[in-house]
Image: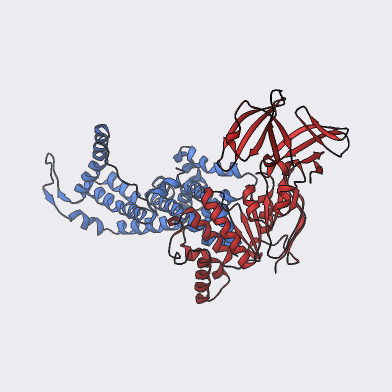
Length: 345
Length: 273
C-alpha cells in the first residue's frame, strides 16, 4: 500500500517556474506517466519526488507522511535514471548489494535478495560482470534491479529507455509493465514519447511549461484531448483554423455543422478520422503526396489556402498526386480559447 | 582498453624523430650511469679503465648522504600528505559547490606559478626569517607545500568534475549519506586521476631545490641540494653521478607504480585531455 500525494507543488529556478501549482494523487499500484516535451517540468517534478530537488512551495506525501524536505537517502523511493548511473567501479552484484549493506542486512540475506532481484530482470548469474561488459539494455535492467532490490514504496523512472533503440525500448517497456503489475508497485514514469505513455500508463499526465494540461487514462488523452496542445502532442493531428457562424464551422475548403456560438475556433481531426473523396475538377483540395505503409496509406492533402492535412486511407494505391479531392471530417473536436467546446459523438 | 593493432606502414620521418629523441634522452643517462659505476675513467678512453663500486662505498659511507636521504623522504611524504589533506577537500569544493569568489580563488593558484619563482621565494624567506622558520623542517614543508598547490587543486578538480552527478544521486537514492557517497562513489571514481596528482606532488617535492635550499640552508639539506654542493665543491665527477643515480630511484618507482596501478589514460585525463 503506497499512495503518493502531490499538493500544490511549485518549483522556481530564479524567475522561471519549472513546475507550477502541480497537483496529483497516485493510487496504490498505479503506473502514471508524466508526458511532455523537454522543458515541461516533468523531470524536475520526478526529482522533487525522489528528493533531489526541494519544492519552492507545496507538499509531497507518501502514505500520508510528509516527505517534502526529507533527503533522498531517507525516502522510500527508488529512482532509475536515464543514463543508468551504475557505479562503474563495482561489479553488478556490488551495485545491487550497496543499498542493502547500508541497511546492515546479514550477508546471506543480501546474497539471496540480490540474486532474486537479478533473476527478476532476467540477469541471473550476471553478478560477477563489470557494468561495462553489459549491453545498454542489460545495464538499464541492472539499474532497475538496483532500485527494486530495496523494495521501494514508489518507483521513479526518468526516461529510462531514451538511449536505447526502438526495438529494445519496446521490449523493456513490456517487461517493466509486467514486473510493475506483478509487484504491484506504485510507479511514476517520465517520458517524452507518447507511444511509450500510451502503451504503459494507467493514467497519463500531460505537462507543458510546468503546468498540467490534462490528466486521464490513455484512451481519454488520445480520444478526448482537452486542449489543442494535448491534441497536437499525442499522436498526429490536423489542426484547422476557421470561424463558426450560423451553426457551422467554416473554412474555405471545409464546412462542418457545429452547435456552438459564433466566433473563431480550431478544428482538430485525426488522420484516421479524415475521409477524402475524389471530386472532378474544382479547387477545394489536391493530393500532394501519397505514402504507402502497406497496411495503410497516408495521403497529404493541400487545401486551397495552402494548409496541408494528413488523411489515413485503407489502400494507398487508390490515390495519386495531383488528384482533386474533398476532405470530410468524420470525428473531430472543436477548441476555442484553448479549451474543447464541442466533440463529435 | 587495448585497440586492435593494425600493421601501419613504416613512417621514415617518425622513425628518425624517435631515434633522435631516444639518443637525446638516453645518451646522457647512460653517461651518468657509467660514471657512477667507474672507478677510473680518464680522457680519451671511450670506456672506463676500471669499473667498480668504489665511489658508491665512499658516498654511502658518508653520514650527510644518509641524513639527506631521510630528510628528503620525510619532507616529500609530509608535504604530500599535508597537501592532500588541504587540497583534496578544496578541490571537491571547487568542483561541486558554488561560493562567492570561486573563480578568482581558483585562478589565484595559477598566480603562484605566473611570477619568477626565485623572487617570490626571496620575499617569503624574508617573512620566514622574522617567524624563525628559516633552517627548520616545517619552514621547508611550508614553502614546498606552496609548490604543490597548483596541480593538487587543478588535477583533482578535473577528476571530481568528471564524476557523473547521476552516479552520486543514485547512491543517495539507495540510502547513502553525502559523506558515504563521497567515500564510496566519488573518491573511487576520481581515484586514479587523483593518485596521479599525488604521485606528481611527491616526485616534484622530492626534486624541488630552490625552496629547500633558500629556506632550509644550512640545517636542512635535501638530497638534490646535497648533490649540487657535491658537484660544486668536488672535482671528482663520480660523487655527483652516484647521487644522481640514487635520485633516479623515486621517479623510477613512481613510473612503475603509475604504469601498473593507474594506467596510461588517467594521467591524460588528469590534465583534461
